[in-house]
Structure formats: C-alpha cells, structure tokens
Length: 124
Image (cartoon, rainbow, N blue to C red; front, side):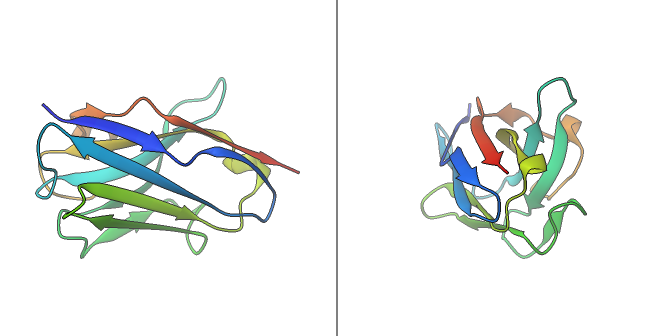
C-alpha cells in the first residue's frame, strides 16, 4: 500500500509561486508514474501534470504549460510541482496520485493511489 501526502499549498497573490510536494510512504514509488490533479469548488477533478517513473517524460495540461513544472526525486520518494505565474483560476485543491504502470497519464482512472489534497488559493 502506498500513502501519499501533499504539502506546500497556501494563499498567494496572482503572479506568485508555490512549490507543492507529494511525499510517499509505505512502498517505494520509484517505478510508479505520478500525476497532479486539481479540483475547484463545484467542478470536476482535472489533470494538471504527470511524470513517468524515470522522470524522462512529463505531460502538462494546456492551461499550465510554461508555468508549472513537475519533477521527482526517487531517492526521496517525492514528486514536486513548481507553480509559477499563478492565476486566480489556478485556485483549487491539488492532489497527487500514483499509478502502477510507470507512465505519466492524464486519466484519473489510471491512478490507484491518491493523496488527501492541499489547498492552493490565488488572490487577484
């Protein structure tokens, strides 16, 4: 079993930056693909970014390309989401998730393990 815990969320002004972390425990996730998703109030959960097990392949939603960067440190069992140029529309609860296939995927159903989420609020 894998447990995922997100951290690094908070309140930031538009144009600011945050770095989210996803820490894994229970089992190593070095062979797992990891994704970040977000859910705003009253909306469905949407894909943000994903990374393959090796970190070689990364994928981004169009809305965050050029502003967000996903990375991982398998030795630390952690995955990060660096968010720059934040906009009010980025406000949401951000979740990390891990899949057993080792790929970066935009599909939520690919992921077997999910964290509890961390709130990101961007003020205008």
